[in-house]
Image 1 (cartoon, rainbow, N blue to C red):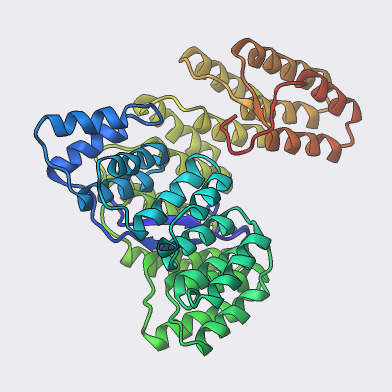
Image 2: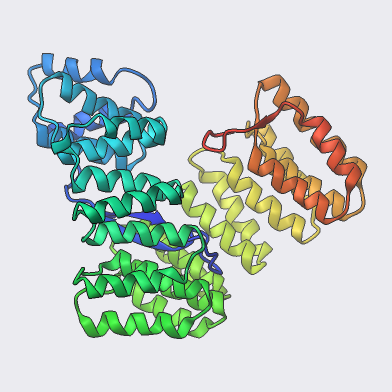
Amino acid sequence: MMTTMMIMVAKNRIRGLPLKTVVTRAFSTAPPSGENKRLYRRLSALGTNPGVTRTLDEWVKEGKAVTESKLVNIVKELRRYKNYKPALKVIDWMEKRGFGINESIHAMRLDLIAKSKTPEIAEKYFSKLPELAKNQFTYGALLNIYCQEKAADKALSLYEKMKELNLASNTLVTNNIMTLHLKLGQHEKIPTLFQEMESLKISPDRITYGILMSSYASRNDIESVEKVVDEMKRGGRVGFDWSLWCNLAGYYNSSGFFEKAESVLKNAEKMMPSGDREAYHFLITLYAGAGNLSEVKRVWRLLKDSFRKMTNMSYYHMFHALKKLGDVDELKKIFEEWELHFDHFDVKLVNVVLDAYLEKGMIKEAEIIWENAISKGCGSDFRTFELFAKYYLEQGERDLATKLLERYACILKQEKGRINEGKAKKFIEHLVGVKDVDGVEAFCKSFKDLVCLYPKKKC
C-alpha cells in the first residue's frame, strides 16, 4: 500500500492524466497494527453509521488499553480513507474521556468538521478555541479549509493575519496559498510566490515544485517546467519521486511531446513502489495519453502478474485507456474477462464500454451490453441514459432521445432519486450546443424537481 496520499490540486487538464496534477503528502504515522488495527477495522466498518462511541466503550470494557497516540493514529488512518465522521467521533470520545486535545488534534478536528459538516461550523469551532490554541497548526488548518473551498477573500485575509502573527513563514502555508491561486486559474501569481519563498529562506518541498510546474504547464510553458526539473536535480534538496515523473509525463502529453513523455515514464516505472496498484494505473493512463498501445498492454500484463486478484478500479483504468486509443476489439476482450471475475457489477465500468461502442456507431453491440448489465442487476445511472440520448441526438432521432430521458425521469421518481445539478447543466449545454431548443424544454420538463442542488452530496 502506498504511504502517500494523492491530492488533486491543479485545475488544468492534462492529456491522458484525468486526475489533473498530483502532489504527495506524507503521513507522519504508520498504519495501525496489532490490536489497534483490529480497533481501526471495527471503526472503519461503521462507515457513516453511528456507533463509534459504543464501539470504543465496548473496547475499553473488554479490558483493552487505548492511548492518545494510538487513537490519533487511528483518526489519521480514518481520515486518509475519507471516513471523516467516524474520525471526528473518535476525537469527541477522546475529549469526553479526558484525553488531552493538543493543537495538532484541534487542527485535525477543524479539517474533519469542515469535511463532515460545513466550513462555517469549522470557523465557529476555531473562533471558540482558547487563544493559546490558536497557533500555526490551527491557523494553518483553517487556511487550508478556505483554500480547498476556493474562498479567496477569507484565505488571503487570514494569510495576512498569519503574517502579522509571524505564523506564515513555513512551506505548508505558502503551498496552500499557491494551491488557491492554481485552483482559481491565477497561474501567473505562483512564480512570484515561489520567489518570495526563496527570499524569505523558506525551503520548497515536492508539493511546492509540483504546483510551480503545474502553473507553467497550464500556460503551455514546457521550457519553464523543464527548468524547474533541472533546478530540483541540481539543488538536491528535493528528489524526484515516481509521482512527479508522472506529472512531467502528463505535461509532455498535453503539449504533444509524446517521446519525452514515454522517456520520463520509464523513470517513473523504475521508482514506483512495489505492490502499488495505483502506480500501474498512472502508467496505463499516461501511456494511453501518449498514444502508445503496446506500452499500455505491457503495463497491463505487469499489473496482472503482480497481483493475485484484479480490482474493478484496475479494469476501469484499462477500459478508459483502450477507449482513448480506439481499440474496441481489445476492450471487448478485457470487458468479457471482467464480466467473469468482477468484484461487483459496477455501472461506471459498463458506461466506459458503452461510450466506446457508441463513439464507433456500434449501437446494436452497445444495446446488447446494456441489456446484459440490466439482467445481471446492474442499475443504470444518468450517464448511461445520457450516452444513448446523445447518440440518438447525433443521429437526428430526437424522439428516441426524449423518450429515453423521460423513462429515466420516471425511474428517478419511483426510486425518489435525484441527478446532480452539474450533470444536468452539462447535458443542457450539449443540447444548446447542437441548437436543440425543443430538447432543452423537454429535458427541463421531464426533470423538473429531480435535480439535486447540493453539489457536495452524492446525487
